[in-house]
Amino acid sequence: MHLRFIHVVWMSLANQQLVPSLDAISSFGWMYHSLSICTVKGVLGCMSIGVGHSGLVFSACSMGNGTSRLYSALAKTLNSSAASQHPEYLVSPDPEQLEPIDPKELLEECRAVLHTRPPRFQRDFVDLRTDCPSSHPPIRVMQWNILAQALGEGKDNFVQCPVEALKWEERKCLILEEILAYQPDILCLQEVDHYFDTFQPLLSRLGYQGTFFPKPWSPCLDVEHNNGPDGCALFFLQNRFKLVNSANIRLTAMTLKTNQVAIAQTLECKESSRQFCIAVTHLKARTGWERFRSAQGCDLLQNLQNITQGAKIPLIVCGDFNAEPTEEVYKHFASSSLNLNSAYKLLSADGQSEPPYTTWKIRTSGECRHTLDYIWYSKHALSVRSALDLLTEEQIGPNRLPSFNYPSDHLSLVCDFSFNEEPDGLL
Ligand SMILES: NC(=O)C1=CN([C@@H]2O[C@H](COP(=O)(O)OP(=O)(O)OC[C@H]3O[C@@H](n4cnc5c(N)ncnc54)[C@H](OP(=O)(O)O)[C@@H]3O)[C@@H](O)[C@H]2O)C=CC1
Ligand SMILES: [Mg+2]
Image 1: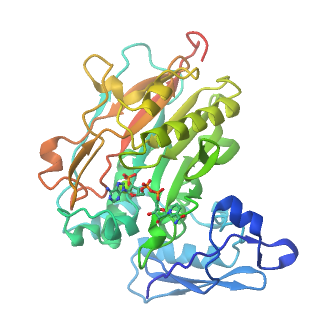
Image 2: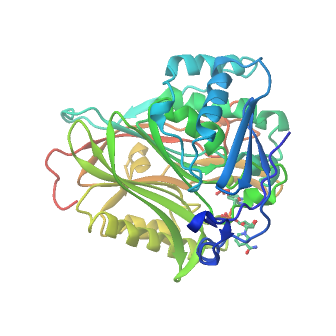
Image 3: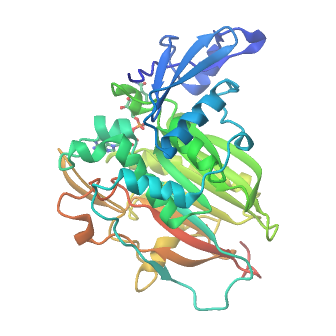
């Protein structure tokens, strides 16, 4: 039983009428296709999303008693949250309602599912700071394009990757294993097309608060048996940070709305009461679109200028920019008045060069090895204490990514940040 995701139109629920509001459609660029019952195949549960008189109606059912704790946890999540869903774009359930999961236990469950897979690659953190330690624990940020399931199986044509290696039941555990291995305080993800049935329920039970903003017209929806649109997601640990404000940004290029998005959130550290802005984005892909990405990047920078009130608060911007460092959009970020630096340059001997790759795949069009993913940060107000080194070419192997060893065609980037006690100058 699979989900056939019909373009469920964004509905105006004024007066509880399910009348598609044309301005909502035009502003979200969603085409009214048809309202229908979609059946979502969860991990071992299934949830039917119907359109009823009071909005989106859910019913969840379990698919059998062979559920391990991981899946039963998820099935329970689907059951407990579905009924209480307010159809405002499937606002995620109140994490208070879901009992916490022990990360060690979840890691064990994932490893049990992955017992036939080769062992995880070992990646080490490179220590980048020699000066005095900060008085507060560092803030660990993970940037990762996790490869949308529908694109990996449907459109991306990773011709050297065995279809078996892309099976969601196991690939999702590889993704979770990577997250649990590095335990980031903040997660900035792209190509998330299993937010509501996998990452949101599980990560909220690990103590994260999540936000999801899908592409207005996701290429996933072109793929048969898709799981809904892909988009950006931002998760942060609630015991460390308080959400001050959150903005979903639909990026424009030359004043036109585009199909790419960003999320920008202002968080306050509960330990230090220091505030900072964290943003995630995924810019337009493919060669020939360089000017388009440059325009999207300028739009994002303008939004971030406004949100940080002209860089009054420190900023971290994570993303799959789909751009090499030679591209205009990279230069815009590197020379922005927001005073940003790219964290992964610090792994190089001279501190000035980006890594040789952050994504490495083989498509029908040939081998693509590129540096497209970055973590930008306010270079005066923040310090990078360490960064997770990349997989070596030997670890990646001749068939490149994704593979039985690694779940995405993009590598995760992970950095530990600390506030500079006395910002060196302007932010
Ligand atoms: N009909 C309409 O009016 C419109 C339709 N669309 C739909 O959206 C889709 C475009 O979506 P959009 O997100 O803007 O497109 P992008 O060009 O940004 O890429 C979409 C995805 O394809 C991946 N990708 C990049 N290069 C290749 C490649 N060579 N082969 C296969 N996959 C690749 C990208 O992954 P990565 O980032 O990891 O490289 C990205 O996740 C269209 O296919 C269409 O379905 C969009 C707008 C309007
Ligand atoms: Mg991709």
